[in-house]
Length: 230
Image 1 (tube, rainbow, N blue to C red):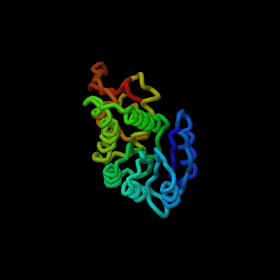
Image 2 (cartoon, rainbow, N blue to C red; image 1 turned 30 degrees about the horizontal axis):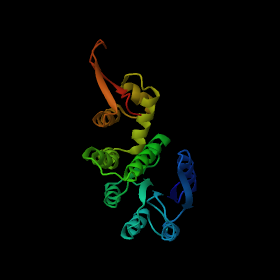
Image 3 (cartoon, rainbow, N blue to C red; image 1 turned 90 degrees about the vertical axis):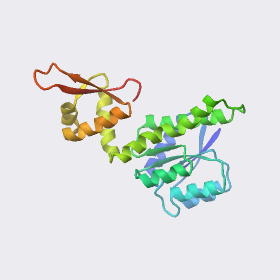
Image 4 (cartoon, helix red, strand yellow; image 1 turned 60 degrees about the vertical axis):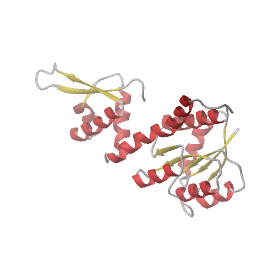
C-alpha cells in the first residue's frame, strides 16, 4: 500500500481529501495533521510516499514543511492543495519539486487527475527499466502540463472562482454552442468579462468558437466545450 499523509488545517477539507483518496485502491491515509509541526515530527520517523499539503497552516507553513522535506532528502511526492493562487507561492512550490498544485475550491475530477498523475509516475519509476526518451518526455510532461494552465491564469489576472463558475455552466450544457449573452445571463457576469474568460478557455483548448452569421444582423460568436476535456 502507498502511504499517504494529509496536512490540512481545515477539518472539513481534510475529511473531503481523505474521502477522495479512499476512492483509489492502493492508497492508504496513515495520518492527518492540522499543523505543519506535528506533520514534520511524524514524517521524520515514518516512511511516507505521498503528501497532500496545504500552504497556510499554523506553526510551520506548507512551504516551510516542504523545504524541510527537501533538505532532509526524503523521497516524498507532494500535491499542494491550497487557496493560494499567487505567482510567488506557485513559483516557490515548483522550485521545491511538487507534483501538482490544486487551488481550492476544486472538484473531485481535478483531484483524481492529480492522483492519476502520481500513480503513473510511481509506476514508471518503480518499473526498474532504463527509460527511452519518449518515457522521459512523458514523465516530465506529467509535471508540467497543469502548471502551464495555472501560470496562464495567474498571468492574465483571472479569478479561479470565475473560471469554475463559467466552466461549470458550460459543462452543464457541453453539447451546445452558447453566446456570451447566454453565459452572461446565467452566470451574472458582464458580457465583457465572459468574453475575456472565453479567450482564456480557447487558448487553453477547453473551448472552441464559431461565428453565427444567421442572426439577421451583426454576426454572433458562439462557444462550446471541447469534448476531449471536462
